[in-house]
Length: 339
Image (cartoon, rainbow, N blue to C red; front, top):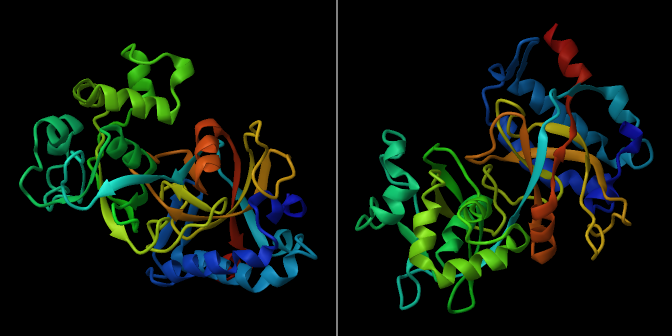
């Protein structure tokens, strides 16, 4: 598999394009207690120091990988994740918003309440949206025109706010209530509000705009509620740094710790408009990926691949859902040093 890895399948020109994203992971790994376990499995454990050494070794190898990707097989042990995790995708939506409540902007996006950790169940979607559990506490970050937009932003875990003066602010996941998640499309389908063939994002938004009270009532079927913080960029992940399309993964840290390096082999949907840039219509991704994000609904054998922003990324998100082959890369030198 090492020789089958293709930076082009990730819209990268070369393996060296991973230098910046890999340095972000290294910064995180270097801040962790090096002797503490980062990943514990029935067969053993890996320390943060081992993951850091693996990332450092990969960084040093990048300039030579285009000529000899087989170096990855020589220098790393490849631990396959089993069962094969489900791979889905997410992107950075851009939505019209106002930082202050204004006529027509009636649906808030909230920062986390200070007592969220102590009382997560008290902030169900029904309690927040209909019971006004957060009203009058000054936690509103922004306001949207459409009742669907806070829900959709929560589903993606972050994105961009296009403000009235034309400026853009980024927001990202800052906490959740931990309650079960249910997608808005599934909710509207089960309620008979929209047929299956009309479950596009724009059709969902149009229906919710035309039926705001009914939309809020139906949305309560998704108990999960996500809170946000402002970011310096539109695509910032859990490490506080920018995400890289087709490289950054959102993971459950008990499956793949933040900062870890892995090899991903997965099919990608090819629409009528073609595959992703640089893929030449292959419809597959075989490349090095980095665990750089997490989310409230990313739990267990599930990975979420960051696809970027814009309409093409949005279309891919809707169609990307398949098992993937994922192998955690660990330096052989780091493993020998532990013995």
